[in-house]
Image (tube, rainbow, N blue to C red; front, side, top):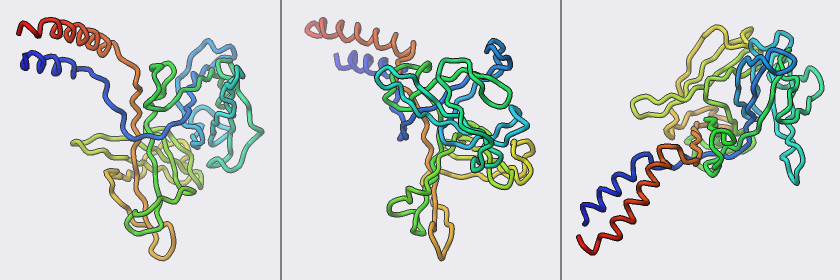
Length: 265
């Protein structure tokens, strides 16, 4: 009987839902970009972290960067609204007023393109599956007043970046991208720098590889911040996959079977 129950436990471990790593919750903006005015000719799909300064890349020759922010959350039946803003630099100098875009509508988006927007929840508690839950991986850079990254982080300086290799606008017409890399069971953040005059991540210049397994990096010796470290937040939604659903159903039947026959074993 003990061996039989052990087999059930081992079987049910296959495809069982895995817990998400530590994360920060938030709303991400999923956009389908179209090259025509009626949103028929699909060009690309992007998943955006609100507040991040994205390079407009090949989407526009008249602006350097753009940013999105959810400003209306559909409370009491109201419409979800996302503010969209383009900039001439690293998101400090707006080119025009903000555009307030309603989700689900065909709206003017990056540069000459149009798009339809959707808001997705980034949380390990999200149960709606890929259609409503975001799997965006984030890097969090935390700064400290101490030399060894001890004590509370300096919240005002905390920085979040997407980790899928997106091109981010930086100062002096430069750009950066960050990628989450798993190498020999070690989690790393790889930063690629594209210096002044390259705001579209076109020509690779330098790669900086950050080991984010609780490694503390020193900064200034005579002023704060004196150190920083990176933390990766990899999102795993709690929706049950097809494999998990089949396994859980079989586990339920096996449990009932062994419960009914245990008195004869």
